[in-house]
Image (cartoon, rainbow, N blue to C red; front, side, top):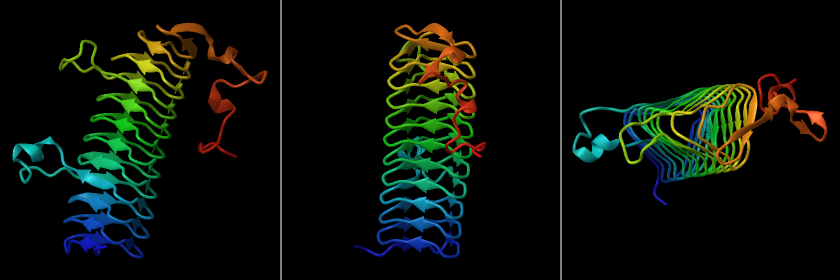
Length: 257
């Protein structure tokens, strides 16, 4: 295996491990204590915070469309990733994106350009976050989730496997309408959120639901099309109260005792 190729114009912190086959381009900054695994490619103008792990075969700072239009040297597209990231093998993150501290991905996740991702966010294996999305603090995306352009997920939102959030009411068109999911909402496996819909705070979207209308705060909906079945506070788990979930669940949350 070839040795790592590290640009002389890169800034490498203290106690950084760079494994064989990695490529580190110009103007890259890698924070102290970070680990860059085999064959990771870190393109120019990428900043990685301290104590971060970049898995094998990741690509950070992937090209935007202007590269393919002959404008590769006209505009730079920096990518910034905060401290304590865990970015697992095969993940691709495009340039012109801002990511906070304690970010994690599963394997082969994709984050497109101009996304804003805050702190303590996780994006599961094979999930796809499209461009111009905003993911708030402590957002959790499980595996095989698709988040369309211009989606906004507020703090502490949970999105479970195989959820699709769409943005085009009359496809194909240029009229993109991002959905918005508010704090503490839970969208269960296999659900589809239609363009521009608002999912209120403390809501629960049941598995396999098709959300065609806004969901009011504190309501549980299920079905195709999704309909209100009850306030979330009426839902029990093993005969006990469970919602709002933040009053009963603390694993990985900042309020954990």
